[in-house]
Length: 353
Image (cartoon, rainbow, N blue to C red):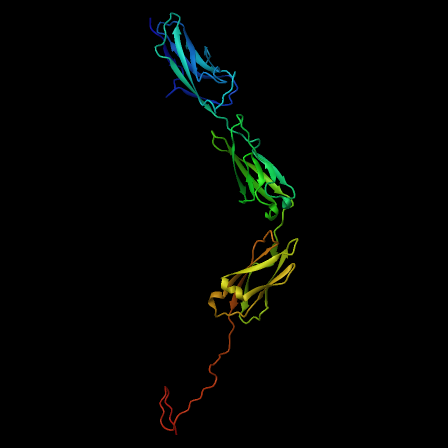
């Protein structure tokens, strides 16, 4: 009488390892095997042990005959998962199942067979892959104020970690451990009316999920002052009087913003200044220009206006000092040469009479 021999109908290439998701909730035939008896006796495959033997899903596995996965195989069995309990990846990452095979005459396979079930932990999903947020009265929003709940959820209650980037990149916002997007700073100086958040989420077992995208409208935000009327090149004669207007520009803002200029090269700042208040401002000559000063002959004058919280985009005036033909200036103007009577030698011969 020959002992029965285990064999898999779908033979694994390496170890018989199968995966089930942590949130598996349907009956599933996990593995198919066949125990062959050389005498063609009927056999019984039995699940003898589950390790660990305790826990909410220690009885979720059973061996079933004639599962229908191997037609024409007389002694086909399967390992079936039954959702009579729940998996928990935090407490059990893998189950080891031990099977035996016996025939109707009492013969038994010499070696038991093991199957390994590895759990794939739940991936924490977001409630939504996109979101719309509205921040009302943005100018009055202060650091710590809640703006949008971007939380994802985990079926097992695992600790979640969040990450967030913004477009454009800014440090005015943060996301906390509860998935809430909050103001990281007072928003009265944010100076824009929209922003996009990209939020990611992960637990201790899975890769990063996301990002989910949240489009946020910032209502009542502080507006940037705007400068119009400049951004051009200007040729300026070097003999232009102090106070000459080189360019006039308009400033649009709810308040009366202050404006300042900068020059490149920095040494040119001595030659230029701002004049005027309110909506109309001018760039003027501050001190006498000098074409012969080659390092300041060409200057980029940049203007920025600010209401104390928001600054404008820069405007520029590209100034080129031009040469003015100047009269010859002899120095000294008078020259007197005195000598004794007689022959005097100089660089040019002079004879006295």
